[in-house]
Image (cartoon, rainbow, N blue to C red; front, side, top):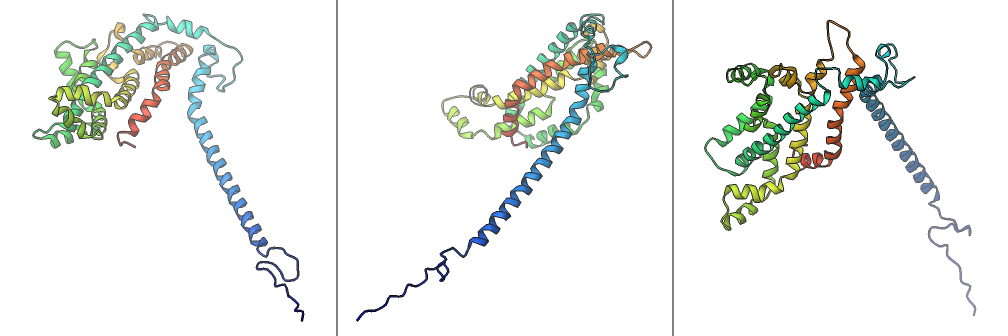
Length: 314
């Protein structure tokens, strides 16, 4: 007796022998949906980048205009407001360098003296004050720390009058001391707070291990804490350089002798309300004064980002 075997249709295939999977249409729909979603995401990304590029161009336009104006003749600076140059006028740099009582390098040297003194003062005083707030225990610690934070909210113009009276009575006007001595007293509360946050992130076990070896607070600070504070110290250095180099109000108040002018006050001397202002020389020397700030930020931005990211200030 012979039996006839019937072939059963395999799952997922049609019984008519076509053998094609039945789920092809959903896959096509799913791929089309994914493709549409990726196109929408790409469109949003392009729109965001376009807005950012436009905003960046608007922010950098004044700087580009100043660069272009420094290369134009003085009489054409405001007649041709665009960024197109018909000719290069390098005489603005040569005339601007020697337009004032002293060469412009003299004022850059004055600013360098103030900047270096301010950096050293902030690094020494603010790091010591930060160690005291972060590691030492003393009466009124929280109260003094709160008062220190309140000084961040206090405008500089509120204390400028009593400070000027004090410095004038001791004969420090027309010297660099009013600009340098406050830095040695940890008056920049922002840097103290930044370093306090950084030191609090350092494990206390390192302090305890050094204390077991017989180290006191000075040795712990110099040998343990300070080497680990390099990112915070670098951030303090960069901010102090930028803020001090660009400080106009403090130098204008305390420095009235042209021999003591810093760069911002010297740039103000190019603008004369009684005679014609040499705008080309002013813009040229402004570009020269921006170069140190640009170079410091260019080479120090890695430490700046690391220092801010590791202190909890985001």
